[in-house]
Amino acid sequence: MADIKTTCCIAGGGPAGMMLGFLLARAGVPVVVLEKHVDFLRDFRGDTVHPSTLEMMRELGLLDEFLKLPHSEVKEIAMQIGDDRVVIGHFESLPVHCKFIAMMPQWDFLNFLSRHGRTYKTFDLRMQAEATDLIEEGGRVVGLIAERPEGEVSIRADLVVGCDGRHSTVREKAGLKSDDYGAPMDVLWFRLSRKETDESETFGHFEAGAMMIMLNRGDYWQCAYVIPKGGIEKVKAEGLDAFRKRVLFMSPFLGDRVDELKSFDDIKLLTVAVDRLRQWWRPGLICIGDAAHAMSPIGGVGVNMAIQDAVASANRLAAPLKAGTVSDEDLRAIEARRTFPMRFTQGLQLMIQKRIISPTLASTQRPKPPLLFKIVGAVPLLQRIPGRLLAVGVRPEHIHTPDMLAKA
Ligand SMILES: Cc1cc2nc3c(=O)[nH]c(=O)nc-3n(C[C@H](O)[C@H](O)[C@H](O)COP(=O)(O)OP(=O)(O)OC[C@H]3O[C@@H](n4cnc5c(N)ncnc54)[C@H](O)[C@@H]3O)c2cc1C
Image (cartoon, rainbow, N blue to C red; front, side):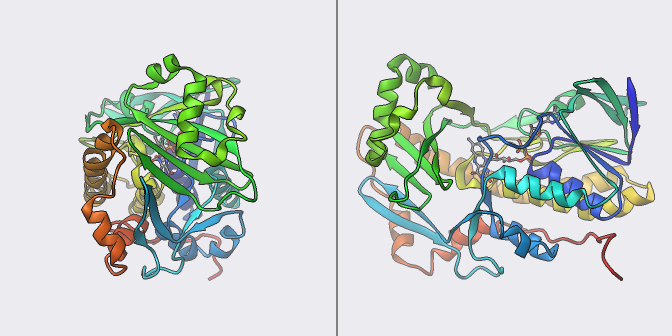
């Protein structure tokens, strides 16, 4: 078994892991990031880069280069509910430089972080490296074991960070306990080609017993069809043709290409979970991002929250990691700082699940916008509140870590 020694070992190269790895390396901390896949090219990742994340890109001096990557810009939150289109939030008055959500394939975002990470010699990203177990000594985590194509590797580190998502191996092996808040839905994820003549907007559509979100990805639509939790067997029993009809009911303009769905292999099931760890850390280890708090897709805020966790962690950890003095108090402080934003955001998601998603999925009547949505839709001033909550969230983080390559 090969051995590696580093200062910080991060399991998982998603938004949380890549941002934390980049920031620590930029601050001069030796860091190894392990990603189990061979590349970042997966379809099911969230594609939303929020104004608060764009603000961090600006603080890092990377915004102009970042916005050269292909993306589209969402400036308001609109929904089609039955016959009515309602705007429930806009981003015009946000106290940030980019007053829009950038819709960008997540692999472009992660590749961007990886490219910039590699400019620091302290950044070591290992693809096809799956964390499988922890190394413990005297009740303290001192490293982890990873499976690579050439065999097992043991990595010793002053700190292990679990950023391996909502099915985290690290949190399971660490024995950290979570509370499961439940989700009434799962999501069927598929793509259909997009034509120049289609509308360009990314949008969500609610009908009796059905919800579909379509993300504009240039030459194709990334579609998310929401079904009741555990409902996949029913969808399969009804057959592919019935599913194509469901899709057409939501978006009749797809009639000339819905046959691109040739089998259920073209449709991926994404199970939705909402949970949160009771304690995010143990001596020598902390979990952040979905590994600490799995997010519902509602609002498309999970990526942003994972990045906020990473920035808060880097701000607190960079100096003690460099000095070799990282302590339980540092880990406790990160959890304390991030728990309120998470509790608040997941609380909103749970309320929307209960008040809107569950009734819509159970309903046989054409839905009408709730009264609150109608009021907000009629008063642009009120649209600032959901706009701000979604785009910036509560207690937004800022970059406080240094850049070791910056000219004095
Ligand atoms: C259906 C659905 C749609 C969503 N849509 C959006 C959206 O549009 N916008 C949004 O902001 N959020 C969305 N979310 C939530 C969002 O995906 C997550 O909150 C966010 O990705 C969390 O980032 P993360 O870095 O913590 O974890 P992840 O993005 O899950 O990244 C974890 C990484 O770790 C790797 N990994 C896993 N196990 C190991 C291991 N043992 N060793 C090494 N590597 C490992 C994985 O391959 C992955 O790259 C959605 C969620 C769901 C379920």
